[in-house]
Image (cartoon, rainbow, N blue to C red):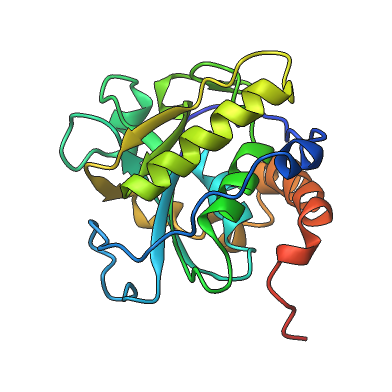
Length: 224
Protein backbone atom coordinates (compact mmCIF):
# COMPACT_ATOMS: atom_id res chain seq x y z
CA UNK A 1 0.00 0.00 0.00
CA UNK A 2 2.38 2.73 1.18
CA UNK A 3 5.78 2.35 -0.45
CA UNK A 4 7.50 5.32 1.14
CA UNK A 5 10.08 4.83 3.87
CA UNK A 6 8.50 5.32 7.31
CA UNK A 7 8.39 9.01 7.96
CA UNK A 8 10.35 10.20 10.96
CA UNK A 9 9.75 13.64 12.36
CA UNK A 10 9.93 15.45 15.60
CA UNK A 11 7.23 17.31 17.46
CA UNK A 12 8.12 20.92 18.14
CA UNK A 13 7.01 22.02 21.59
CA UNK A 14 8.70 25.32 22.21
CA UNK A 15 7.89 27.94 24.76
CA UNK A 16 5.38 29.87 22.69
CA UNK A 17 2.64 30.55 25.21
CA UNK A 18 4.44 33.72 26.28
CA UNK A 19 4.72 34.79 22.67
CA UNK A 20 1.02 34.24 22.05
CA UNK A 21 0.02 36.26 25.08
CA UNK A 22 1.80 39.25 23.53
CA UNK A 23 -0.28 38.98 20.40
CA UNK A 24 -3.56 40.85 20.32
CA UNK A 25 -6.51 38.65 19.46
CA UNK A 26 -7.50 38.71 15.83
CA UNK A 27 -11.14 39.12 15.02
CA UNK A 28 -13.30 36.05 15.44
CA UNK A 29 -13.97 34.15 12.26
CA UNK A 30 -17.32 34.64 10.57
CA UNK A 31 -19.12 31.79 8.92
CA UNK A 32 -18.11 31.21 5.32
CA UNK A 33 -19.28 29.00 2.51
CA UNK A 34 -17.26 25.79 2.31
CA UNK A 35 -15.73 25.38 -1.16
CA UNK A 36 -15.27 21.61 -0.92
CA UNK A 37 -17.55 18.64 -1.26
CA UNK A 38 -17.98 18.35 2.52
CA UNK A 39 -21.15 20.45 2.57
CA UNK A 40 -23.14 17.69 4.26
CA UNK A 41 -21.71 18.77 7.62
CA UNK A 42 -21.12 22.47 6.96
CA UNK A 43 -23.79 25.01 7.89
CA UNK A 44 -24.07 28.58 9.11
CA UNK A 45 -22.78 27.59 12.55
CA UNK A 46 -19.52 26.04 11.38
CA UNK A 47 -16.35 27.28 9.71
CA UNK A 48 -13.48 25.61 7.87
CA UNK A 49 -9.69 25.82 8.11
CA UNK A 50 -7.11 24.14 5.88
CA UNK A 51 -3.54 23.56 7.06
CA UNK A 52 -0.43 21.93 5.64
CA UNK A 53 2.09 20.98 8.32
CA UNK A 54 3.87 17.88 7.09
CA UNK A 55 2.36 14.40 6.99
CA UNK A 56 -1.43 14.67 6.97
CA UNK A 57 -1.73 11.57 9.16
CA UNK A 58 -0.11 13.50 12.02
CA UNK A 59 -1.97 16.75 11.38
CA UNK A 60 -5.30 14.92 11.24
CA UNK A 61 -4.62 13.02 14.48
CA UNK A 62 -3.80 16.24 16.35
CA UNK A 63 -6.79 18.32 15.27
CA UNK A 64 -9.27 15.47 15.71
CA UNK A 65 -8.72 15.72 19.47
CA UNK A 66 -9.70 19.37 19.86
CA UNK A 67 -13.03 20.23 21.43
CA UNK A 68 -15.13 22.08 18.87
CA UNK A 69 -13.56 20.32 15.88
CA UNK A 70 -16.33 18.40 14.12
CA UNK A 71 -14.49 16.73 11.26
CA UNK A 72 -10.95 16.50 9.89
CA UNK A 73 -10.34 15.29 6.35
CA UNK A 74 -6.95 14.52 4.85
CA UNK A 75 -6.41 15.73 1.31
CA UNK A 76 -4.38 17.70 -1.19
CA UNK A 77 -4.35 21.37 -2.13
CA UNK A 78 -2.26 24.06 -3.80
CA UNK A 79 -1.25 22.21 -6.97
CA UNK A 80 -2.14 22.17 -10.65
CA UNK A 81 -3.16 18.52 -11.14
CA UNK A 82 -6.89 17.75 -11.02
CA UNK A 83 -7.89 14.90 -8.69
CA UNK A 84 -4.31 13.93 -7.81
CA UNK A 85 -3.45 10.52 -6.40
CA UNK A 86 -1.18 9.96 -3.42
CA UNK A 87 1.49 8.54 -5.71
CA UNK A 88 1.33 11.64 -7.94
CA UNK A 89 1.65 13.98 -4.96
CA UNK A 90 4.61 11.96 -3.66
CA UNK A 91 6.32 12.39 -7.04
CA UNK A 92 6.74 16.08 -6.09
CA UNK A 93 5.58 17.23 -9.52
CA UNK A 94 1.95 18.22 -8.86
CA UNK A 95 2.51 21.27 -6.65
CA UNK A 96 0.06 19.85 -4.12
CA UNK A 97 0.55 19.83 -0.37
CA UNK A 98 -0.67 17.18 2.06
CA UNK A 99 -3.27 19.08 4.08
CA UNK A 100 -5.91 18.59 6.73
CA UNK A 101 -9.23 20.33 6.24
CA UNK A 102 -10.88 21.10 9.56
CA UNK A 103 -14.58 21.80 10.06
CA UNK A 104 -15.15 23.39 13.46
CA UNK A 105 -17.67 25.18 15.64
CA UNK A 106 -16.50 28.80 16.17
CA UNK A 107 -18.60 28.96 19.33
CA UNK A 108 -16.34 26.33 20.92
CA UNK A 109 -12.97 26.90 19.27
CA UNK A 110 -11.74 29.90 17.29
CA UNK A 111 -9.54 30.17 14.24
CA UNK A 112 -6.97 31.81 16.53
CA UNK A 113 -6.96 28.66 18.67
CA UNK A 114 -6.44 26.50 15.60
CA UNK A 115 -3.55 28.70 14.48
CA UNK A 116 -1.91 28.31 17.87
CA UNK A 117 -2.10 24.52 17.61
CA UNK A 118 -0.92 24.66 14.00
CA UNK A 119 2.26 26.61 14.77
CA UNK A 120 3.06 24.69 17.94
CA UNK A 121 2.79 21.19 16.48
CA UNK A 122 5.24 21.45 13.58
CA UNK A 123 8.39 23.33 12.61
CA UNK A 124 7.34 26.35 10.51
CA UNK A 125 10.94 27.41 9.83
CA UNK A 126 12.02 24.60 7.48
CA UNK A 127 11.33 24.96 3.77
CA UNK A 128 9.59 21.93 2.23
CA UNK A 129 10.55 19.74 5.16
CA UNK A 130 9.29 18.27 8.42
CA UNK A 131 11.90 16.13 10.11
CA UNK A 132 13.09 13.50 7.63
CA UNK A 133 10.18 14.22 5.29
CA UNK A 134 11.43 16.37 2.45
CA UNK A 135 9.58 17.70 -0.56
CA UNK A 136 7.10 20.40 -1.54
CA UNK A 137 4.18 18.25 -0.39
CA UNK A 138 5.33 18.79 3.21
CA UNK A 139 5.63 22.57 3.17
CA UNK A 140 4.12 24.66 5.93
CA UNK A 141 1.06 26.50 4.63
CA UNK A 142 -2.24 28.03 5.69
CA UNK A 143 -4.84 28.00 2.92
CA UNK A 144 -7.24 30.73 4.01
CA UNK A 145 -10.97 30.61 3.23
CA UNK A 146 -11.74 34.28 3.71
CA UNK A 147 -10.11 37.64 4.32
CA UNK A 148 -10.49 37.36 8.09
CA UNK A 149 -8.44 34.16 8.15
CA UNK A 150 -5.83 35.77 5.91
CA UNK A 151 -5.46 38.80 8.19
CA UNK A 152 -5.32 36.70 11.36
CA UNK A 153 -2.67 34.37 9.94
CA UNK A 154 -0.52 37.24 8.69
CA UNK A 155 -0.83 38.99 12.04
CA UNK A 156 0.23 35.97 14.09
CA UNK A 157 3.05 35.10 11.72
CA UNK A 158 4.44 38.63 11.96
CA UNK A 159 4.14 38.76 15.75
CA UNK A 160 5.71 35.34 16.25
CA UNK A 161 8.64 36.34 14.05
CA UNK A 162 9.07 39.51 16.10
CA UNK A 163 8.90 37.56 19.35
CA UNK A 164 11.93 35.46 18.50
CA UNK A 165 10.06 32.26 19.34
CA UNK A 166 12.20 30.49 16.76
CA UNK A 167 15.84 31.08 15.93
CA UNK A 168 14.97 31.12 12.22
CA UNK A 169 12.21 33.04 10.40
CA UNK A 170 8.82 31.39 9.90
CA UNK A 171 8.47 30.30 6.27
CA UNK A 172 4.79 29.32 6.48
CA UNK A 173 3.05 30.25 3.24
CA UNK A 174 -0.32 32.02 3.38
CA UNK A 175 -2.41 31.32 0.29
CA UNK A 176 -6.07 31.41 -0.76
CA UNK A 177 -7.77 28.03 -0.92
CA UNK A 178 -8.64 27.38 -4.56
CA UNK A 179 -9.43 23.69 -4.51
CA UNK A 180 -9.33 20.87 -1.99
CA UNK A 181 -9.15 17.25 -3.08
CA UNK A 182 -10.07 14.54 -0.58
CA UNK A 183 -7.31 11.94 -0.22
CA UNK A 184 -7.87 8.23 -0.72
CA UNK A 185 -10.02 6.40 1.84
CA UNK A 186 -7.11 4.62 3.49
CA UNK A 187 -5.61 7.98 4.49
CA UNK A 188 -8.73 9.06 6.40
CA UNK A 189 -8.81 8.65 10.19
CA UNK A 190 -5.45 6.98 9.74
CA UNK A 191 -4.14 6.96 13.29
CA UNK A 192 -7.38 5.76 14.85
CA UNK A 193 -7.69 2.97 12.29
CA UNK A 194 -4.02 1.91 12.39
CA UNK A 195 -2.82 2.66 15.91
CA UNK A 196 -0.87 -0.62 16.13
CA UNK A 197 1.24 0.10 13.07
CA UNK A 198 4.88 1.01 13.65
CA UNK A 199 4.57 4.54 12.27
CA UNK A 200 1.58 5.28 14.47
CA UNK A 201 3.19 3.83 17.59
CA UNK A 202 6.61 5.42 17.23
CA UNK A 203 5.88 8.70 15.47
CA UNK A 204 2.26 9.79 15.92
CA UNK A 205 1.65 8.49 19.45
CA UNK A 206 4.60 10.34 21.08
CA UNK A 207 3.56 13.47 19.21
CA UNK A 208 0.01 13.19 20.49
CA UNK A 209 1.16 12.63 24.06
CA UNK A 210 3.15 15.87 24.00
CA UNK A 211 0.31 17.72 22.31
CA UNK A 212 -2.17 16.49 24.93
CA UNK A 213 -0.03 17.82 27.78
CA UNK A 214 0.29 21.28 26.23
CA UNK A 215 -3.33 21.63 25.09
CA UNK A 216 -5.13 19.59 27.75
CA UNK A 217 -7.65 22.39 28.36
CA UNK A 218 -8.70 22.34 24.70
CA UNK A 219 -9.23 18.58 24.27
CA UNK A 220 -12.53 16.82 23.79
CA UNK A 221 -13.94 15.41 26.99
CA UNK A 222 -13.65 11.67 27.48
CA UNK A 223 -16.90 9.75 27.06
CA UNK A 224 -15.93 7.29 29.78
